[in-house]
Amino acid sequence: MVRPETTDEVALAVRAAREVGLPISVRGGGHDWAGRAVRDGAMVIDLDAMRGVEIEGTVATVGGGATADELLGAAGDHGLSASLGTVGSVGVVGLLLGGGYGSLIGVLGLGIDSLLSAEVVLSDGRVTVTDPQHDPELFWALRGGGGNFGVVTNVRLRLHPIPDVTAGTVAFSWTEAEQVLRGLGGLYENLDDAFDVMFGAMHTPDGTVLFTNPVWAGAAEAAVAQVDRVRALGNPVLDDVARRPLAQIVRALSESFPPGNHSRLSARVVAHIGGAFIEAFTASVDAMPPTCALNVHFAHGAATRIATDATAHAYRQPHLVVEILGIWSDGDGAAECDWVRDTERRLDGVSLSGGWTNLMAPDDARNRDAYGTNRTRLMAAKDHYDPDRVFSGVGAL
Image (cartoon, one colour):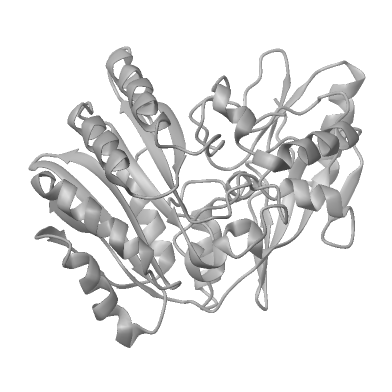
């Protein structure tokens, strides 16, 4: 394991690994349940010391080890926000390489849609700064193609003048789940770009709840009317929506999933909320172990107005990303892992091909289809930039 502090030290580490025939894995500033940052018989390049965030005007330069908490906190000090992140402990670069889902997806798009450039150490130790004019094919591949092409030591991101949002949690009793889910399906058909409504299910001491996390990034005076559309889906048992900085929202979600637990996670991409999805979702929650959860993101608005082949990220139509979160603190996790697999099988019948590789197991056969029609072009980029297969990233090619 090496812990570089500069891009030059990363390049030195890559060259040293190549000289002795070691493959390389890269650890950013966040986390990966499958432990892909640690590769047997390999060198781990740990970017934890490279976590600086510098703001100049409306552009952030973000180190490869920085987290969403650090980026959004620094941007917030300037009255700005970034178009990524729902959980603050996630690494910025790792999230970006998988597309970059976040609570501002409708108004700003995916995180990769605000990416201006990336500094990358390639498999031969060379350093390149890629953007639409320089190494454009590498720039295309990095935007959703996973950590397959080099060590991304920093990125430049466009920031946006959204200092505060109206956000929080509106939760409903599980007895109202089917009604609320049908209502969400209708809500999603006519959702303002500035409105994001993530939903999910979890067990609480007071019973199972179907929760929503509405985030309104539009004019403050319109917030109540927008959030009332969510409240009207049922009879809320919790409502803590207020005007807050986005950084506060993602920090709170991090605290909901503290470190130190064991995890087996997965993800499926679904076209819309229909009867078959509701049946699979509710059956999975009814069978869900106490510490597990389901989170569902809705991609809409600006994120869906980008051509499928404009970036490596293949999902540009409106869609749901279902996070299947198997979590436990004690025991062998057998029940939780079985539940994850059973939930995968229930959802497979209503899912699009592939899935979101950031949360899928390395051996999940659906990884192969996660890039859709972009896979052939990505494979050509892999052959060009890493012909010896030095790097094995998320959604490895």
